[in-house]
Amino acid sequence: MEDVHEVAVRIAQNTAPDEVDLAPSIVQAMLEGGDQLEDLKSRSRGPTLGGFTGGVEVAGDLFQILQCVASCAAILSSVFALKSHRLSIRVQSRTLYEHEQRADETKNSQTPPDTEQTVEAAISSLAHQLQSNGIASDRANEISRLTLAALLENPEASQTLLERFDKK
Image (cartoon, rainbow, N blue to C red; front, side, top):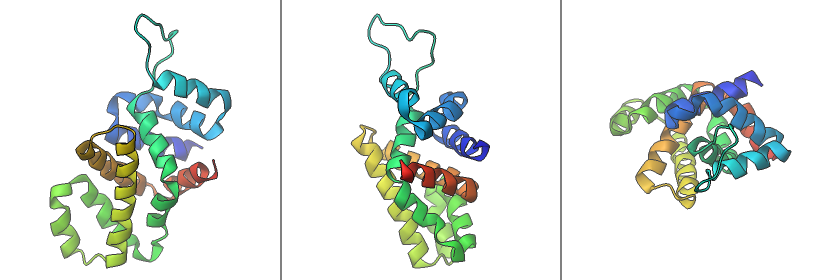
């Protein structure tokens, strides 16, 4: 379980740095479901005007991002199915952080077209899901790239997290 928490922390570091401390508890609640998840959902909407949070920290962007990751778990998992192209995936991981340099580096890395298409489909799917949750297009694309890069940093733990999300 610790590896799954580490993946959530990495995603938070890349996309919602103010919520890094909340990452393990958010992903735990999402995986366990039940009252913890319902409580998290109600708190993630934010406090109402004049309301109190009862001393419990309110989750924001990270919960929404992880919900989108869970919704896209199957397509994100397809990136990890490219085991024969592990080196290409590592190059993709590095270049996802620097979108402007991405085109040049992937051209020079001789990334197979199926790898490129799979990665782009995963990014596009996650970005679309984020946009449907009200996140602006440019920010959704940035979050998607940074999230996938975080997932690729620890493929085994990320695959475990995606499998657990996919079972929910």
